[in-house]
Length: 209
Figure 1 (cartoon, one colour):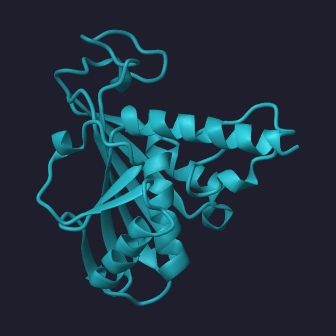
Figure 2 (spheres, one colour):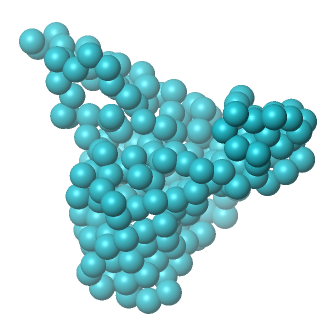
């Protein structure tokens, strides 16, 4: 499993099957990577408020997965399971077992948002965390991780090619070790761009062997 900007350099052409993870993992992993490398994440809970997808029902009907999943997508906020947070432990092994989460499927056509609430190993203010994320967005993770301090809403990110856009004004710190971090993503277009990026990286690596 790979997330571009996080662990794609570990790709080996001998691998027969690879995964680009999910759109939500692609949003969460770059954010978690920066925060963990700078401050250490002891544990965290993630909630994604996720736009409707093609697997959902137009009206109430049977669902192979769960009863809630069979309810009409356009009329409900639907609690749902997601393996996105746990999957971060596969691309960032040092976080394995430290993150889990859930989803709320909402009746919007596109763009989702991750809410990561976490305990930090090192003491830091929310401003410290914002500064670290902004630096990464302008440096090593430019084009993958974004940063905004504008008063944005979901439609502002339709067509955004980045995996994760940190919303500085939406998050908060309760103490020097307990933070709520919010990051947006176009769960269709942003993710599709990462699929292409991973394919291009795999082709380059394979060409050298």
